[in-house]
Length: 123
Image (cartoon, rainbow, N blue to C red):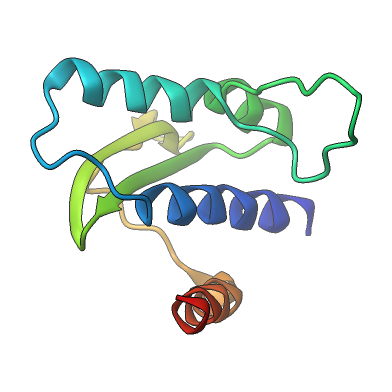
C-alpha cells in the first residue's frame, strides 16, 4: 500500500507540474534543468511548518521503497515534453526501463482519474 501511495504522490506532483504554463519554446538547457528538478526534488507529502524538508532523489527513493523501475512522462499543453525510464523492467532478464516499457496500471488509475477530474472542476 505504501508503494501505491508513493506512486500516486509522484503522479500528482507531475500532474501539478504539467498543469503549469511553461514557456512555449524551451531550450535543451531549460529542459535538462526541469528534468533534474523533478529527479532530485521529490518532497514528502506531509511537511511540518518550521521543520527542514529533505528533497529526495528519484532513483534513490525507488531503491529505498523496493520499486524496481518507473517510466515517467511529463506532458505540457497535452503534448509530451519529455519521457524517461528509471530502474529495471525485468531484474531476471537484466532489462532496463525505457520510454517504450509497458506497465500494468492496475487500480491506480481510478484515484488518478478522480484527482484529475477534481482539478478540471476547480479550473
